[in-house]
Amino acid sequence: MDVAAAEPKKLEDWDDIINSIQEEKCILFVGPETVMKAPGILYHQELIKSPGFQNNDYFKYIPRDEMFLLSQNFYRGKLVSRFKNYCQQNAFYDETYKKIAAIPFHTIIAVTRYPFLIQSFVKSNIDFQHRWFSRVFDRSKMEEDIDTPSSELPLVYNLFGKFDVDESLLLTHNDLFDYLTKLLSDNAVPAKLKEIVKSSNQIIFLGFKFERWYMQLLLRLFELHDLNAQFERISLISGDDDDILSICKTDFKMNFIEDNIDSFISTLYDKCNQSGLQLRTPSVAANANPQMIEFNILLKANHFDEALIKLQQLENKNKLDDKVTQLTGNWNSIKQNQIAGIYTPEEFTVETNKFRQQLHTAIEDDMDQIK
Image (cartoon, rainbow, N blue to C red):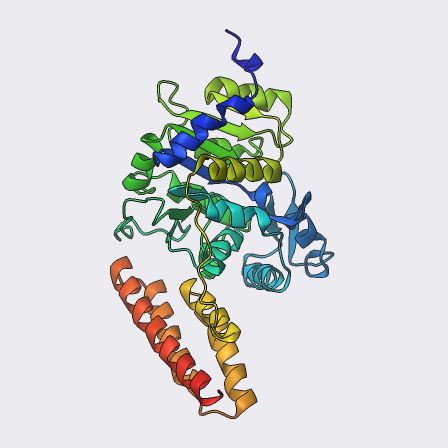
């Protein structure tokens, strides 16, 4: 049989996907093309057209690899700052991500540098595990444990770093090569994560262009080229040419669907609902203070720097006692110890949790004073 002529996914096969999700055997890979500024408008296309990324002497955008080329390595700080500022100041189209968070996938692997999928889980107040791989990788340190994921406690694993850890972000060619060197080394990806992928029977890819050479490397990293594996590989067609599609069909047994991301997720969301599969729903207290909800979102996502800035603004506006100076010093000390390798991953998690509680207590105290 000619694999290049494989039939697109048929509508009657939706039941297979629903059953796989229900049995916690369906993995979702989320790629960069899922991040939209508006329906049909890619977020990164708008980002690179913005004034901070146009006609400067610091870096140049290379569309082929979706990476930036620095004129000098020390300009990376400028790039990271502009990237994060743009993401924090410019909204994205979140309807699709809201539905992804609601669909009870037990494991989602994100291959994107943007923070918006995590934000969708946080804003919906959905409990989840967030783990991530950093290009700053020390094999002498233990990987943070991954609890067995479930529909009640899903795993969201970021392969392209964590938004609020500057040194982990993949933005430049140097970042990419450094990242791949570490990612492809022995035991770089958690064994638990590989086991989760191998034990699945459906793997769905959303928002990928497989013409990016490193995307095909990532497929092999998870042994998706194992043609004897029992899982089915499903992907939406996303602008790749016929030769790339043929490679993916032959080497990875990829079954391509003629559909767009919004339509596919909306249909899957509706099918889950119609089948009686319980969707995850937002759970925010009806009478909660909106400002406190915003702080809680930042704390749950470990966006402590942003929370400290907002707390400083709150204290200045209401002439409250300064709690931010000491808290900022505490947080900077924790970050420096983590970068210096003083903390093990477990110790860093413990210190982060302690600091989150300290910051939460300070915020609650200030909020009580301005009631």
